[in-house]
Image (tube, rainbow, N blue to C red; front, side):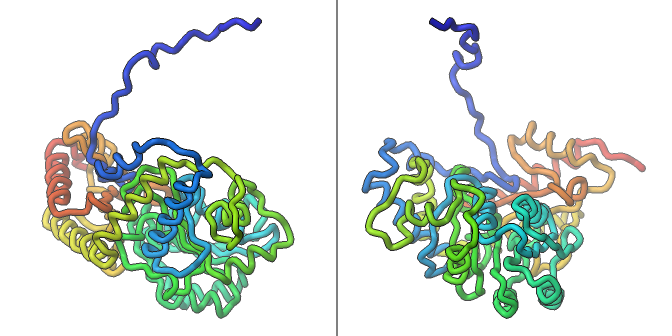
Length: 391
């Protein structure tokens, strides 16, 4: 008989305590009581008919949010990174050419994922805060002839909302799939998948949707499915294999669903509720609310003498604002002071924007003039009390 040699941890003999905070960083965002309550419903089996009905509701909600008729639409069990890997692992085989647009960290991540499975990866690179013209994109498509072109619509590390018009048509001209990351943008900025010719689109649950992290909506066009289901080799990941996921989510037209993995059923409850909230408000109303709050915020920042990192107004992401790190200050001291004094999270840069910016996310229920005023007051207080170098 084995004996217990590791004692019970004392930390787990204390009650769980989680503080309430204003989550105004680039994500996750605050989860409203209605969505938290939905996630507290009883756990039932992941293959029960009631769960399949909830999953069908989620599919319909994602189709509305993405503005797509794609049958191959569902939510991956995992965060946005999981959906990014699902998209790349299914569409790309070893030795194939992939092109990624790098104007922040997400293009870098997509390139690394493709490299790990043996793709021949090429990049086009813009400085942080910049974006690409369609002429630059077409030149790269013509040169590298990729099977997939990756672009982040909302680049949360730099605060850029990338223009999408015409890019889908360019990709199709060169027989390339158009893959778009909309984790930081969907629901907060205009985005219509089918109209824009996007072949694979994904997002995360924890941004504008205000659901807990852990589910990632994704959709594949018929063009994408044709390539995926005519692969020479199996996808490198069993967990993310589209043929299995399509059946589990009832996207393949087969009469019965087969066990693939245990879906996070309580996360499905929360995601369904968050999509219901978006449906109730309406996409266009949500887009308009985020844009108005962002413009109000930008005006307030400039009136304080702060500078916006993204110069062109049309390229500013309405959900995540990047502020040029104030000269003479330590950005870490500012974010720490605001957290400690105002119980409010904002963050510094990420990837290529580290040390260059402060990032403020106002997404979903957090996108309001009242919350903008709260952030502006916290920033003003921090700039008054934090140390400023004279150099």
